[in-house]
Structure formats: C-alpha cells, structure tokens
Length: 394
Ligand code: HEC
Ligand code: HEC
Ligand code: HEC
Ligand code: HEC
Ligand code: HEC
Ligand code: HEC
Ligand code: HEC
Image: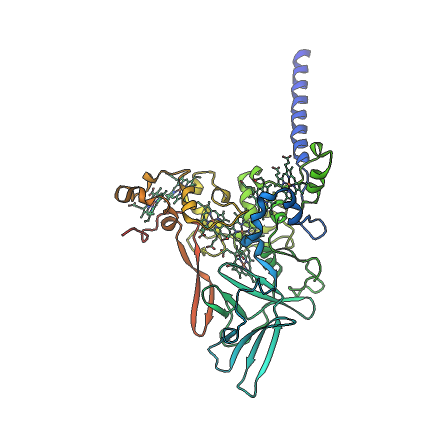
C-alpha cells in the first residue's frame, strides 16, 4: 500500500470512530431515564407547571385508574336500599356502607337474628369507565380484592370471576395487577410465598406522566437550570423512539399476560420490553380475547402490517377520546372512502362510520361477572381491523 493510501485508510477509520463517538454522544445527550419510583418522581403537578397543555390528562382513564376510596371515586350507591347486593344464596347478601370512618363492604350470612358478618374497608378504587373493583389492606400490609365490584349500567355485582353465593375475601392482589393500574407500589418480599405484601408508604396511585416518560426529576432540574441548553433532556419522548419501542410502551399493559423476568415497576420507558417480560407464545388462531390485548389484535391487522401505524396514529393519551366520528377520520389518512367495498352502494354516508363496522365492539370472553345466576359480560372495542361481514347497512 502506498503511504498516501495508508493515510486515507487511517483518516477514514478516524472519521468512522468520530462518527460513532458523535452518535454515542447524542445518545448520552438525551440523558438517562429510569423507571419512576417514589424517590425519583417529580409528580404530575410539576410536569403540568410547564406542560399545561397536557392538563386534560388528569381526567383520563389512565390517571383515574386507581384512586384512594373517596365518595367521588366510588361509583356505586350507598343509599339505603340501593346499597345491597343479593346473591343466589338466600342466606348471603352484601351491604355497602358509608360511615364516618370510611366505606365498607359487609358480607351478611345466615338468617336474622342469627347472622354473622364480615366487614372490610374499601381502601383503593380501580377503574372508572365500565366498572370498578375495590381493594383492601389486611393484616397490616397485605392487599386483597373485595368481593363486590361495580358495573356501569348494572350497579353492585359479584367481582369478576367470583363464585356467586359465597363470601370470598381471599383474592390476593399481585404486583402485576398494580403495575398495570398504578405508578408505584413497593413489594415487601420477606416471604416468597406471600405475593401481596407492600409498603404502605410511597404508594403512587393512577398512571402518571412518568409511567410513560420515565422518572422526570432530572428533566425538571434541567428545564429550571440556567444551563438547560447544554444539559440532556433526560426524558423519553415516545414519538422519537423506533416503532417497536413505541409499541412496547403501551404493550407493558395492553398485551395481556406475560411471564416476568424482572420485578414489577422496573420497566424503563424506551427500553425493549423483553427485558421486563417474556412473551408467552401467541397462538395465531384468533383465540386472543378482545379484552386487554389491543397490541396482538392490531398486529394482526393488514393496516398495521402494511404501514407504520402505531397506537398514536389514532390515540392521544393526554386527553379523553370518545368521538367515533373523529376516530373514523383517522382511517382517511390512509384510505379513501372509495376503497370500502360498500362505497358503490352507500357512497359518502360511510364517512365517519368506518370504526363501527371495521373495529366493532365485541363481547369479551374473559371478563365475566355472575350475579344471581345471570352472566354479565362486557363489550370491548376489537383492534383487529378487518371486514366483519355481519356489520352491514340496511
Ligand atoms: C421547568 C419547566 C418544565 C418542567 C417542570 C417539565 N418540563 Fe418537560 N419540557 C420542558 C421544555 C422547555 C421542553 C422542551 C425541551 C427542548 O425542546 O429541548 C420539554 C420537553 C419535554 C418532552 C419532550 C422531550 C423530547 O425529547 O422531545 C417531554 C416528553 C416532557 N418534556 C415531559 C415532561 C414530564 C413528564 C415532566 C414531569 C416529570 C416535565 N416534562 C416537566 C419544560 C419542562
Ligand atoms: C402502566 C400501564 C399502562 C400503560 C403503559 C398504558 N396503558 Fe392504556 N390503559 C391502562 C389501563 C389500566 C387502562 C384502563 C383504565 C381504567 O379504565 O381504569 C387503560 C386504558 C386505555 C385506553 C382507554 C381510555 C378510555 O378513556 O377509554 C386507551 C385508549 C389506552 N389505554 C391507550 C394506551 C396507549 C396508546 C398507550 C401507550 C402510549 C397506553 N395506553 C399505555 C394501562 C396502561
Ligand atoms: C400512557 C402513556 C403516557 C402518559 C401517561 C403521558 N404521556 Fe406524554 N406522550 C406519550 C406518547 C406516546 C407521546 C408521543 C405522542 C406521539 O407520538 O405523537 C407523548 C408525548 C409527550 C410530549 C411531547 C410533545 C408532544 O406534545 O407530543 C410531552 C411534552 C408529553 N407527552 C408530556 C406529558 C405530560 C406532562 C404527561 C402527564 C400530565 C404525560 N405526557 C403523560 C405517552 C404518555
Ligand atoms: C397486563 C395489565 C393488566 C393487569 C395485570 C390487570 N389489568 Fe385491569 N385492565 C387493564 C387494561 C388495559 C384495562 C382496560 C382495557 C381493556 O379492558 O381492554 C383494564 C381494565 C380493568 C377494569 C375496568 C376499568 C374500567 O374503567 O372500565 C378493572 C376494574 C380492572 N382492570 C381491575 C383489575 C384488577 C383488580 C387487576 C388485578 C387483580 C387487574 N385489573 C389486572 C390492564 C390490566
Ligand atoms: C397508517 C395507515 C392506515 C390507517 C390509519 C388505517 N389503515 Fe386500513 N389499511 C392500511 C393498509 C396499508 C392496508 C393494506 C392495503 C392493501 O394491502 O391493499 C389496509 C387494509 C385495510 C382493510 C382490509 C383488511 C383486510 O384484512 O383485508 C380494511 C377493512 C381497512 N384497512 C380499514 C381501515 C379502517 C376502518 C381504518 C380506521 C379505523 C383504517 N383501515 C386505518 C393502512 C391504514
Ligand atoms: C386505527 C385506529 C386505532 C389504533 C391504531 C389504535 N386504536 Fe385503540 N381504539 C380505537 C377506537 C376507535 C377505539 C374506541 C373508542 C371508544 O369506543 O370510545 C379504541 C379504544 C381503545 C381502548 C379502549 C377499549 C375498550 O373498549 O375499553 C384501548 C385500551 C385502546 N384503544 C388501546 C390501544 C392500543 C394499546 C393501541 C396500540 C396497540 C391502539 N389502541 C391502537 C382506535 C385505534
Ligand atoms: C356499514 C358497515 C361499513 C362501514 C360504515 C364501512 N365499511 Fe368498509 N367494508 C364493509 C364491508 C362489509 C366490506 C366488504 C365489502 C365487500 O367485499 O363486498 C368493506 C370493505 C372495506 C375495505 C376493503 C377491504 C378489502 O377487502 O380489501 C376497506 C379498505 C374499507 N372497507 C374501508 C372502510 C373505510 C375507510 C370506511 C369509512 C370511510 C368504511 N370502510 C366504512 C363495511 C363497512
């Protein structure tokens, strides 16, 4: 090799190295984030002091998905007469009471005057839209689900999956349940056989900004510092992540069951979800239930496979979205109404109605509550976008 050629190779090598260093530097410049914990959280109030335009988040199902038990948070009625749940067992009913010391569920067994009672206080409320379940502390630091839940449009019901006619207070609340419905609970792992022990301090209820954006104290410090221009943002903006990582940020809670590899609440936004959980083999046969697995259903759709669609194509999680006409408008960012097989017959009247036929609300097979011999099932919006021939216009 002539000396000048060798120089060229060396210079090219150095340039590559420098390029690598700049890329690595960029990564470092974005700053590190961590899973949010009580000791590194900034809290929504701090975030909103600068990002006031995201204030609508505080009224969303995410934010309200777990709350302390207050009269406002509990959807069920405590009015005499409406506060009783009868069961198929004539000698068991439940009574819900609001007292000076809190809200209680009481199982009354036997016939008057020989009745026995078990009363537990409602400590936490989960859910705000279709229904609510209630949790209680027992033996100091163990968390359990209460036997009576609430379903919108029905009222008090047996908790989903509970036997009708039996007073059952023993369903433990595992960390994974809280990971999907709250921002932080610290498990006490003194005895591995007891899966539902938690510290009662440092509990962070509801899904907060930092669940999806990572712990924000460093970011807040940066933005309040005079040196902010040279400090890393130290916060995750999902829009800047590669598509699989964007989906991971939702799949943590919207892809159903998975075997954990690390403890609950350790997922760091922006990192591969496989570090936190191992996905159980997903069958490809349509067996996936519409409840709770929007990711797997969407992944099956031709829309998803043939485009760069993510959840954010349709959802803005910072506000409540209920308008199906607005959602149907999102279809038109990729499709023309003319592409619908029904267009020749129905024309423009299809516009604004795409979702009703191609993402219909279907009955969940997994959420089931039995009350006085009747099954109560819930409807969930399927995310498998396709043709459902049974959905036609007259
Ligand atoms: C003191 C004001 C302030 C506070 C408090 C604050 N931010 Fe920011 N944030 C900003 C500013 C300014 C930017 C734009 C920074 C830039 O473009 O370099 C920003 C950017 C962001 C971004 C986009 C980052 C990117 O790379 O695109 C996210 C996400 C974000 N903030 C979330 C949060 C969250 C979550 C909290 C609460 C933990 C929070 N912010 C608290 C001022 C603040
Ligand atoms: C930490 C767990 C968690 C993460 C992460 C999460 N979700 Fe959710 N999401 C939930 C839970 C729990 C509910 C149901 C809340 C309720 O009704 O109590 C929910 C509800 C929703 C709803 C229904 C809201 C409504 O008002 O009808 C949408 C839409 C949604 N999530 C989209 C997303 C998207 C998109 C992402 C990713 C950007 C995401 N979620 C990330 C747990 C999560
Ligand atoms: C359920 C997950 C989730 C929660 C909770 C959440 N965000 Fe976001 N946030 C996102 C996603 C996803 C994006 C990217 C949206 C996109 O792709 O357009 C985003 C983007 C942002 C951005 C970037 C600028 C913008 O407007 O797109 C800011 C700032 C931000 N969020 C602030 C907040 C604040 C403040 C809160 C709490 C009040 C919050 N977020 C709660 C998921 C979440
Ligand atoms: C893998 C995450 C995950 C786990 C684990 C989980 N949930 Fe959920 N849960 C969700 C999501 C997501 C929704 C809403 C979307 C849906 O139903 O598809 C939801 C819905 C609910 C609702 C109805 C909320 C409403 O406003 O309509 C209740 C109540 C609820 N869950 C309670 C629980 C309880 C109690 C546990 C634990 C014993 C639990 N969930 C375990 C993710 C989870
Ligand atoms: C990000 C772009 C994008 C969005 C948004 C989108 N789609 Fe699609 N969709 C596609 C692509 C690409 C295909 C595949 C077309 C092809 O292969 O010819 C497709 C295919 C379809 C199909 C055929 C499915 C099948 O199994 O044969 C239907 C029906 C459909 N889309 C309806 C909708 C509806 C309804 C909406 C709104 C709820 C929507 N799409 C939103 C890109 C999108
Ligand atoms: C093509 C548009 C589209 C995309 C993409 C999309 N969604 Fe949805 N999503 C909807 C529509 C429409 C609804 C129904 C809203 C309603 O009924 O109020 C919905 C409802 C939901 C609900 C509430 C379900 C229920 O019935 O309680 C959850 C949870 C949800 N989406 C999560 C997600 C997640 C997670 C992703 C990404 C994996 C995603 N969505 C992607 C259109 C979309
Ligand atoms: C009343 C129910 C209904 C409404 C509303 C509706 N569709 Fe359809 N769509 C259908 C049916 C049924 C087919 C299959 C028709 C056929 O093949 O004869 C279809 C076919 C399609 C296809 C073609 C799928 C393929 O085989 O390639 C696309 C794309 C599509 N629709 C998109 C849309 C969009 C976008 C909207 C909203 C502007 C919409 N549809 C509104 C019922 C509906």
